[in-house]
Length: 233
Image 1 (tube, helix red, strand yellow):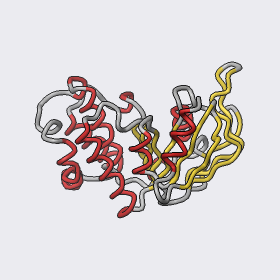
Image 2 (cartoon, rainbow, N blue to C red; image 1 turned 135 degrees about the horizontal axis):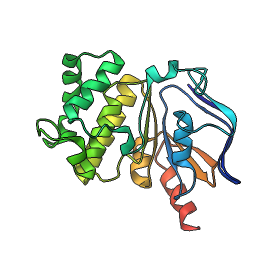
Image 3 (cartoon, rainbow, N blue to C red; image 1 turned 90 degrees about the vertical axis):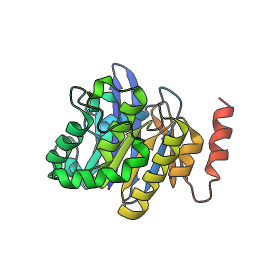
Image 4 (tube, rainbow, N blue to C red; image 1 turned 180 degrees about the horizontal axis):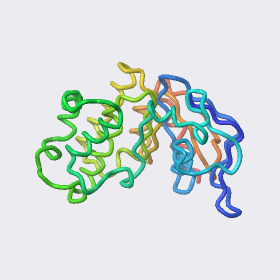
């Protein structure tokens, strides 16, 4: 589903991503972990063709993301607030995203019901623009906007940031349901190892732009491996 070949990204002389080979299969829930500067967000931006590769290619459904638009129909992401349209209300934003995907207003309304608990009565019907919401609620709007399309591939960068504990628990539940019931391939990053291990069945550890460990997470033992790694730094 996602295939990486001989990928590098440089800013000047600094190499921020260096991944010779990687394949992410349909239905995997992949967590990307690493300290600040490891290259996680840069890698996401390369997958989404927001950065131009220095060398190599990224294939999404067999299509080079830099040379095709087809993959965009089956991929959704929330990386930062730049993905929001802050002069719209949440309702307008969700309806706009639906129109881009060919989803009518009625179906958008139906899909939003799955996020009722996550929104906690703080998002819809407030008659204010996205720019006037708190950081936590902006995060919620961005995550919902990405997930409402029910994409084949969902990419989320630090989705637990700014969320209160109840919202963190709820979004983990929703992510696991999307992965199990819809077969959504999920790729996400987080500094919170506990959240990452709970949601992911595979964990990629990045350091200096390289993937130094590729761990399959079947029984939760990956958390101890990761803690040991970070404790030694």
